Picture 1 (cartoon, one colour):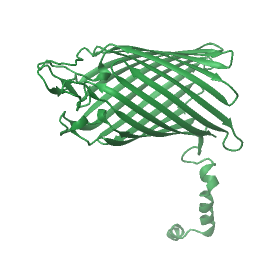
Picture 2 (tube, rainbow, N blue to C red; picture 1 turned 45 degrees about the horizontal axis):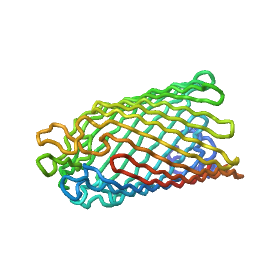
Picture 3 (tube, helix red, strand yellow; picture 1 turned 90 degrees about the horizontal axis):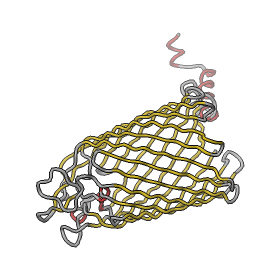
Picture 4 (cartoon, rainbow, N blue to C red; picture 1 turned 60 degrees about the vertical axis):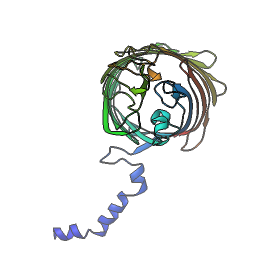
Length: 387
């Protein structure tokens, strides 16, 4: 009898089963296995274009073997961000960027190989935050990046603790990253696979100073191991011709960041940023940034942005290396340099009625340039809904 009941359920049991699979039960009602249904809070899409041009000594293809080569690069990057809640305690953020790279001399072996003249890459980053108590949030993050010939995986955790009705917030986190990619020599020949890893720990402190002023300070420490450069990068040699980069297999990096936000009496906001960076390769960098936001109407605001960055070069940076050098690099990113970024944006948050509460539109433009012959134009367009 029991076997018959299992094999042939009654009509009442079948009706109950069908009722449990209705759209309302799946989308809105609480679920015994998940705790409660997912509810989308916002969906944001963004398309960004990067147009880079300039020259660097790490790149081949210049007028002579000793001359810097082109760093021409264009990137088209669509991306999407979805924020959803699961009950009162769980928030999910899923971010999906896709890169389409053309004229990718930094990702290829310049004139020696056309394998990476056109590259597609995609990634997914999923962060889940759990409100353990009214004052403690726990979060987990996992990400995957796929690109030919590159794979990257990351995973991390963080904790956030608030005090005095969120007037003070302390946070700590850890993140591990593993990259696995093809090794190409400076002649464009594939030399198998190689990898690198990085582990980051961070601490943060945020304080409400006045009803209109908030400040924060964060410190991060990263240890990297493995193949820490682009294997196709080359270095001009004093004896003529070019040789491969020779880099340490370990790098320790420190970053200290301070931020402040000041609300202004004319319905605006000023955001200030400072970053001190240092590593054991000999690079010390300072970055300062200011952003001024001004609301023109309840729905429309505009912003202006300026950033200045200065750094010393790696202790083994050179544009003409002796043949017997045990460490050498000509990468323009590791050279002494100053850079500036100037930009602005227009943002419209238009309220709507119904399930969609607001429409978000944003147009941003930036101009980046630096002292060692690299420039970039960046244009970004975003649209989104808040529910």
